[in-house]
Length: 96
Image 1: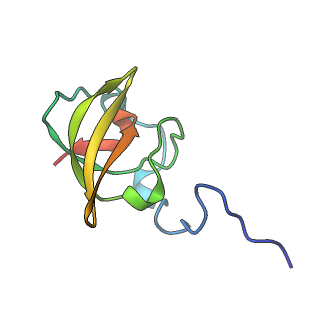
Image 2: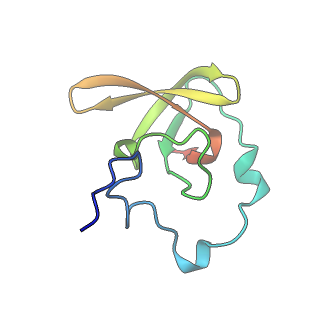
């Protein structure tokens, strides 16, 4: 029997799957989104683009843009009772 994977995408068979109608090349407007500091964003992971992908636990959460790090954005979210910082590429974000 094979050993279980413990990588960053373990147990994401359904969470990081695209619907049939969403398959194909990524639209350019998803790549070049611009957010300002203070904007509310939702984390919506694009499974076909691995750069700047946030951890699977943060899929579907909303937060506030705190700043940038290169081409990525720093997002502050509340995870249960703790404030956490997520660094994500803009392709994995959408306006909330």
